[in-house]
Length: 126
Image (cartoon, rainbow, N blue to C red; front, side, top):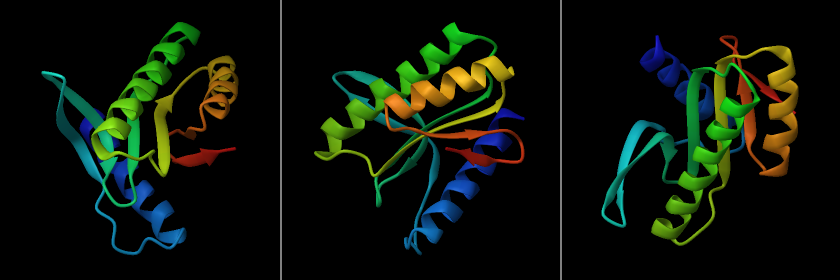
């Protein structure tokens, strides 16, 4: 289910970017980059426009939410250094979370300018 959820999110991301005027976008799942001697995995990646995303099936509590956002922030910083520019879009996509965690994630992702996508229906949360 995890790999297919990532593909589902990649398709949704391509559609979002298409609606924003990017008609020929390649969104990769599980992009690996070498940075400072270590391999870094990016769950969701587009080079043009530059998009970085983290995809997970479930976040159970606030501490997991903090970890997932932290991973995305760290990977975004790495991609920014490698490409010499800030990403056009940062995405956190989760399959499921308790309502109180979703409310916490809404605030946290707003703080870091991350687009939050929740659920198997894949709806963007503002």
